[in-house]
Length: 400
Ligand code: PMP
Image 1 (cartoon, rainbow, N blue to C red):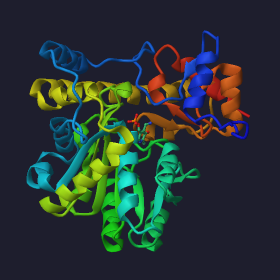
Image 2 (tube, helix red, strand yellow):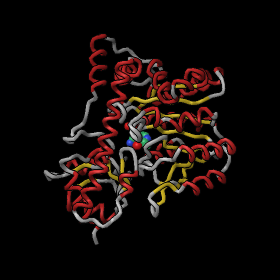
Image 3 (cartoon, rainbow, N blue to C red):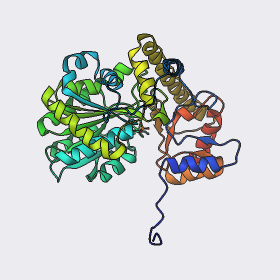
Image 4 (tube, rainbow, N blue to C red):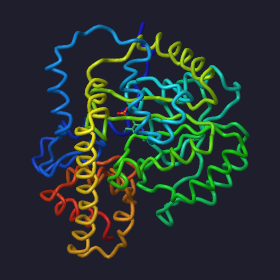
């Protein structure tokens, strides 16, 4: 029966992580997956999460099903965080929000919903480059997926004028995935003025912004500042959806906790949209899981734990920023003549180093440093013990 099934290629990110696991070298370094590590290279359970988990245990709760749309208290606390308190308080009845399986679930639920209600010919545009799963998710929801211009390798920054020109000529009502902050993989975000210009084009063209916020807090260390673009688009009443993930920001990767919201025009629309989101969720997962939502709900609704979380997000963002500086300093110290300033200019969890495919292969095969084919590295995988080794290896593969 399965003789005709061809072997599928490994996932471009998780495939590298699998190869890392198999490598017996003791000096190996994993810079592939976007997961935060401490200075000893170890996964971190945030203190706010430990405390929230304790509270969950003490409550001695049951394990009954959540409703189809999940834990509403969690979802609304997430929306307050994502859209900001002022917007949320005045517009909560315009937000159709559901609990989803992290950022991936937000995208899939959102695209399945959009596919049912947008004109059949609608194209989804994703930034070039982007997190590769964006293409998969929109494609599997039935959309035609194309790139919009984002990163310019020559200037190692966003080619904003081209992006804007494309947004002006693409068909009215197109869907764009926009990374709300900490763009993966390039680490380059739009400035607030650029967001404003883009907003104006979206309003003129009736485009739909699917904002993906998987790294809130990782650009600036400040969750409020990092959601500026979301607030701007929402305040201006752009057609928008927002996906929020707590995988990175709370270190709840495997708990699969996130939210999806659709901004509507009134409470009646919200109820209708919500009912349709439930129609999407029911045949996919029936209802979402309990535990991660309980932890995130407690953190987001307990003022003390919320402040603790903000501080811990900043600690993570600051350590990553320091590692950028250390990497560039070490590259200079070992004699690299290249300009590596893009690494310190970029923000978020990743650096788009600019090394080519061949150099990536050499880093993996000769130095046991694992990174994805695009040359993207997870800065969170660097620490004071391995940054010197990584810098030397990068120098060795780029010096000729
Ligand atoms: N969007 C972007 C841009 C991402 O980088 C990721 C994770 N790598 C996600 C969404 C989804 O992650 P998760 O499903 O783990 O929240």
